[in-house]
Length: 153
Ligand SMILES: Cc1cc2nc3c(=O)[nH]c(=O)nc-3n(C[C@H](O)[C@H](O)[C@H](O)COP(=O)(O)O)c2cc1C
Image (cartoon, rainbow, N blue to C red):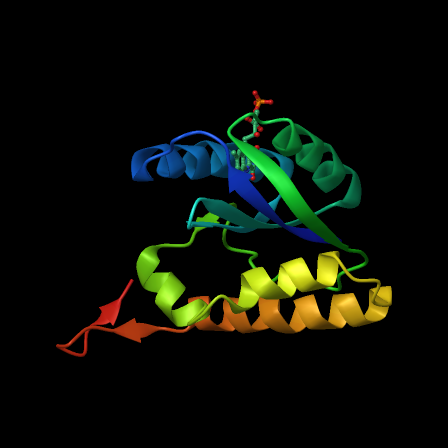
């Protein structure tokens, strides 16, 4: 199992509907090729996390990299992952509501920038990203309740 996370700059105006369309189409294709993960867009940047079979993920990231809608800045590869963190999501679009729960500040962006531009040992990079992804997946999978104590699906 191979995973990767990247940060990209959005290179053309995209509204919320465009982002939803990217995630919806991605989800359909990912289901077919066995890729799971999440996509988040904020402040004219995308953060995407992908996981799947190594060859499939490497091929997909080449396609995504050539997509003119964004410019990839930093990509961090995580090799030999023991399991999927987002097994149920062929591409989970992170909503603004999710965002306030998973990144209360710019932690993830700064960690990606910091890690990608320094020469940490691969084990340290893996461990740092793993910890963050693990935390995000736990938060996203946590059941939520509305004010009437009804579970939000
Ligand atoms: C930010 C971003 C994320 C994307 N994520 C995916 C993805 O997870 N899976 C996918 O198949 N395509 C994704 N795409 C679309 C690909 O770049 C490309 O358009 C698509 O895979 C082409 O599909 P096709 O080979 O069936 O024509 C993404 C595009 C952008 C801009």
